[in-house]
Image (tube, rainbow, N blue to C red; front, top):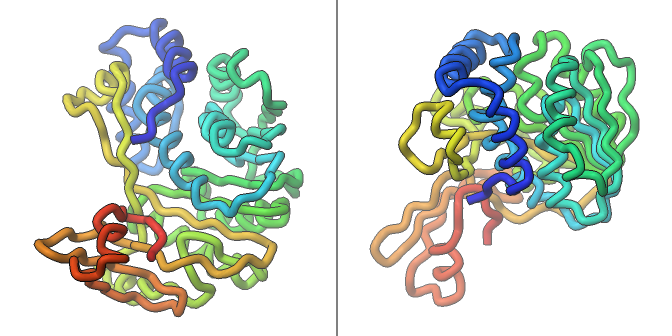
Length: 318
């Protein structure tokens, strides 16, 4: 499980000390309702609820997705729709050569909250906090890595692909898109995938090919969509905000990593939870040929079976 850095967790607790437990719980319920209605953060209490109930999941997902980038000495990152900047924390842990992070966010109060959370703890990075409406920015500044995380779904539909195009134009090495692991989130990723391929982008992950998505037919029939899951621990405030008993939660997400540079095709990708049975493991795999395959790895296969037993949803295979 991928948990928050201790410094970030402590900083969140210091911020939450300013409100009561009842206020936190009520604001968390309201924020969940707002997200379901296509609305977002509107009050200071919603901001507190966000760092308690949602930030841990967005941090864990970003940390998980970052591991699929090819090994490169990336020194700069642009976070479009940065919120409180949790992605900067995940990037600091993932990219040892990172020097500069630009965080673009429309809500000035979220930026100020993010600055308080990061105070002294990310001092080794050049953090550039920029208030901006990303739908009105003509261009974005060039960076090695550009990320749009859990933000496209909050934009008007007419702006979504325009923002993706401008983000890609600002990307030197990798553009990363992350959305909720819902059919709606996957539909956004599919649309962005098609547009980026038309612009000449090279797919890095999760797709191991440049062909049309082999899940497209099943998705249109409402049967399946490409998404993944990460398990994360719940801290005290996280459990309180959600009125939850479990010490963990599973966050479903969908994502896409592309590059303007040409990279070798990735290995096959496990796109559903592996099924471990007596004497064999069943893997549903998206292949380099652009097809879906169900592979059964028998215990008799001394080479692959141990790896199949340890494999996880979203892993490369073999």
